[in-house]
Length: 543
Ligand code: G6P
Ligand code: ZN
Figure (cartoon, protein in one colour):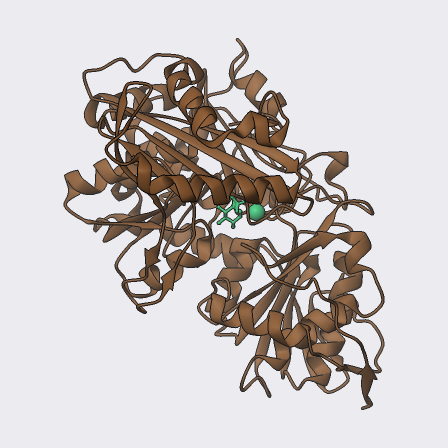
């Protein structure tokens, strides 16, 4: 076996963001770019000799090239085995499960999530640790520091492995196990949900459309929904992963999953519609004539989780990211369980899940999940919804309305200003932060401000602190404005504005969301000067 030591020079831009390193394919395909980053990760890990690494991605353009490089670098760095999904495929939640199930040292997930793919699209590499969750900041900071100094990487001189063939191969001395990407995950889902009840619901004529958006959940959804649960063929659409996601944008929101939305609002709507993103961790839930916001979905799933066998004993607690609406807080309050507010980024849920303090977590950015893995999980959310629908024998709309009548409704929207220039976006945030102390006790357009701060999280498990996680302006009436810069954009800055207003159980639950929130939208613009600073008249995306 020949281990080559290749000299290299650092790249200055290998700082992992909210979810790993994400860049254009044109950046990743520079000579040594992948090699440097992967070696920087391995250089920061202790005790990898002889251990197992899980490897897979969402099948986007460059997945195949990067996987072969990583296998050779892993071999040269002394890993004992790499478990890789057939065809290089592993959804993010499936990779998290495979890491846990096979007690691997960690895993590399190749994806840029919901960002477009293709030669001019995005690519990404994320390292997950042995609990199956994204590496904590301590590791990602060390990786970034290492990437700025790296002067060599190790790689074996060995042929590519054949990723189409399930079974054992070798890369120099290291075992490469090509595994069925769906099998372990499907078996896990079967332990959590009442598959018999869901099967009976489909057999009785329940109809559904699942849009895999030409991304990684296609094989999972075909196997689980149509194969195991007996949904009719054709329930899953766009179910073959394509390197450029069929030229689309694999983000399951009302803009990019418009076909599904239009269908669900039409006369021909099936009972249930759902979609997932590029790497399978996000979800979109739409009932016939009823879109369910991710924040509401989190609250409803938490309230109804005991309908599923995996959660029959009840849930220990709920966590949500700070910008996610407070709908779930009301469920936790009623159940008398712990509720945690964390910064944006799934990694912040890891400690709470590991410590058994929460069972269900969710984010406004279409992520929901539980303690079954350490990532958010798109298909899991879909299956839990199906389990709840099968158990309650009610429509999505009835379940949503019933929830609001019990807990009240948190009207909620997010306005994104994408690809704005970084300098004015940062200046906007700095100026807004500077204003915060003066806002408390003031009224903004007639609304008294209860608090105004830049969110700081104190992790109750490891005692760490994460500051500057987004500006919150809360009003005495329970409504709230949140402003932060996205940590996942790849070009310029993305400014996110989140707006929320609470309507009690007996209040008005059928207002148009944008009009219900328009006074807050106007306050946000005057406080932060969004239009003036960004030069935009309107947000690029409203969800
Ligand atoms: C990814 C992360 C999520 C996060 C989302 C939005 O999907 O996994 O945890 O909520 O991006 O992050 P952003 O920083 O762009 O608002
Ligand atoms: Zn994703």
